[in-house]
Image (tube, rainbow, N blue to C red; front, side, top):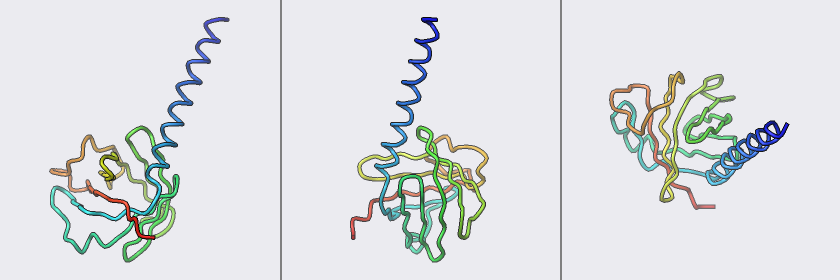
Length: 139
């Protein structure tokens, strides 16, 4: 009986800490982000491609870039599952890894959605897309 109580307590604390970390990360990422660097398959994208915005509000996202895309993000540690619900990518699932350092949000997407990138390098991966964002402080 004592072992069951201890196991439950440990499991509860692990789940609580995981949920709290995901919530803290999600709230840190809330806001409007503009790309400062993008590449795909190891090649930098032209500056014209940087004319977009990523808006994150808890687990909802909107991308505004000529056309609009909206959906949800599920966080799991340093991984993201991105589910497009409306817009140009409606119905698609993308996998990604991310990091937030020195005021920059870096996301490496696997546009095939079949596995998570192992690092922030797109070389040799034609369907890997990397974006480095900074928060848009304009109101």
